[in-house]
Image 1: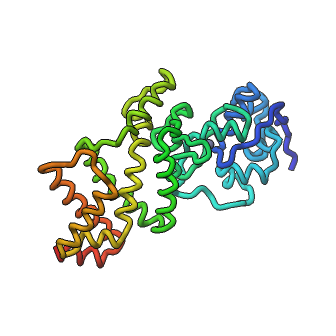
Image 2 (image 1 turned 90 degrees about the horizontal axis):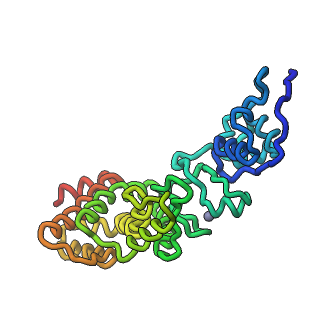
Image 3 (image 1 turned 120 degrees about the vertical axis):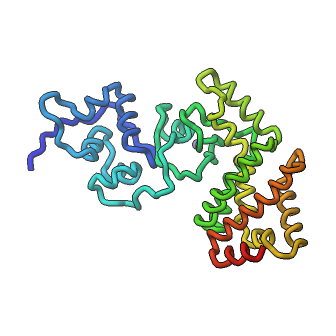
Length: 299
Ligand SMILES: [Zn+2]
């Protein structure tokens, strides 16, 4: 079938970034070549290009179909042979690490990628790239808080050891305990102040407000510690044990792994022990329904 080829290769041909969203790649080609996006999509005013998106991208960018299919996950549905599985459920659109972008593309033009929701830190460049990052400039430098970088590695070790289901369940279930501790003025060493100051020195465009990533990055090591503690079936069952001595040892283990800088007193202290127990029971019930039921009737 005759297809009028109205699309010509662009003068500047950027390679796609691994995992790049299709719209991001179109935007970068448009910005690098200073050609409006609308003109890339429909180069002629009289006759719209009949070329499929992937074909048009091949010609414009000078990249092979195979390379585009391998690097841009959105193009799997564009009729290209699937070179690898489609976008997994735990992948979200976010900004690629701005230092990886410069290193790989040679350009500072920001890149949107499909990234795993559990990758919060770029291990190569020590930047926080995960939750609460809404612009590439908001990616926080973690060089002065190496425990946040170590926590990312620890998180992946936990996920490999206990599996995705148990890790996700513990992450979800411990969030209430974590927000309760924050509400009771649990202090995070000097990490909060350090990351807050780093966010502020970046300039007025990064307002160190409640939604900025410094707050969530500062608490990340503790979040991973909580997940690791509750992921251990042995420890959970000790918390839910009938023998009060075993329970006391399990709670002591909690305080050893999760030291509170200012010990909780009175109702807060009671709240902590009941919330630890309720959280352990909830996780046990979700992961091992028969054991969870036994534990809840036993106490
Ligand atoms: Zn990076």
